[in-house]
Image (cartoon, rainbow, N blue to C red; front, side, top):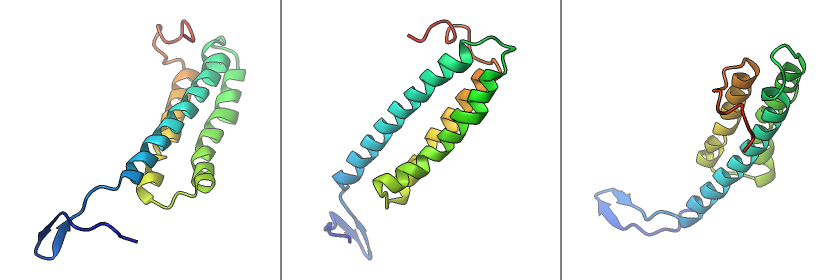
Amino acid sequence: VEDRSPIHLFGSLAVLPPKLEFWVQLMVLLSMQMMISALFAVVVYKFVVSRSETEPASYLVGFGFVIPLALYVPFYLLQALDLQSRTLAMALICLPILVTLRCMEAMFRFVPPAAGKSLK
């Protein structure tokens, strides 16, 4: 329900003030995604980057755990948070894309040397 009154009218078009609730929800959602992405990064570092190149367990962790879970998390968040805004739902797309690409980068050893030295 649109409850804002127009700031300025241009014939049949109107300029509406921004809703603060949307921006707060967006910041909370992006903060949650950053924390979830950091958790995925720790798992990828511990079980993929720090392993040897010939060890198949890194592929098992990446393709069997990290990537499927990263693809499932946005759907879970949509249901758990009951997001109705399509804009906020689209903001969830960055999480599976980034986690999947970073995990594949680590599995196929395209990690920069400085990133693979330490978890800090």
